[in-house]
Image (cartoon, rainbow, N blue to C red; front, side, top):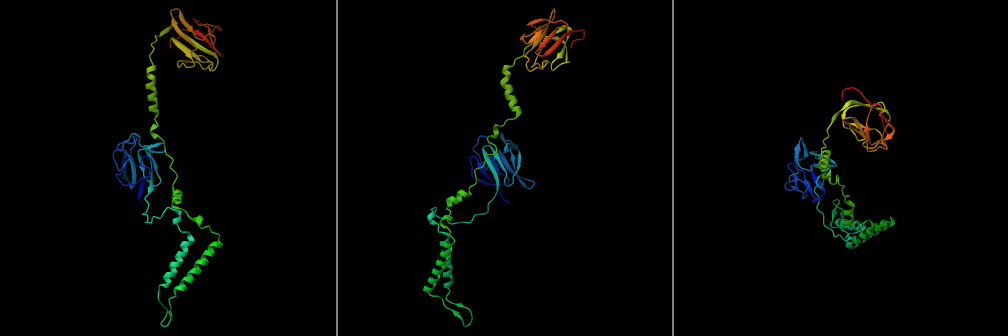
Length: 330
């Protein structure tokens, strides 16, 4: 079965090409040249593999696409649709040679009604029969050729009878005529729906992430912090809230607690960020918060102050107890 490539959309819309081994598609090279910036110089090539014609991508940037998917190799079978750049292709069966036909006038008046064509055919058949001078039926029997008056009379009777028969069936013969323009419009296929509009704009997750990092890297900077051990290890025990019975044992600082903290996360939807900070001083561990109305020390709004065993830090419904011990730093 001979196959062809039909271009449904793109710079060469409507053109067809025979599918043969070695056929190339490209912007600069190949039998099918597409004036499209999304098409590589030599984009794809038709090859014969295991008895099947295949279309192979030649390392192009935008590739060959079937719907939203990129393909390196396609088996070319009837009905397959794919896109290269802005062009949409369909694999179709090669049509049989069309018989030559006379080019009739497009004007509707140039077409005869069906009943007139039929009557003309009857007249021709009658003339064919009467052109024979004699028909020998037997050795002594001869049929004479009818006269012209008899022929015209017979044809007139047949024409009148046929016309009456059509009229009795109430056929509107003029309404049955279809002009070439109407026939062409009825046979036209609907415009194809693009398989994948602008497929080259689809990007991988790696490309999106790389672009974001490049945009954000200028806003990032390293902040060096000096850390130091606490004079004694510090334990924070959650007495209430979602983290009840959780114990944090801290041996160095500074340490920041809050909803967005990876180190010391506070699980409360209404907690400010950061909730509080603990940092070492010569006199011990210092407590500090920017939200004293929400984060309180021993039930009192406190911006900062030293911590001692038995102190309690509250954040909304969360209650944390402070205790110093002699465990090793963590």
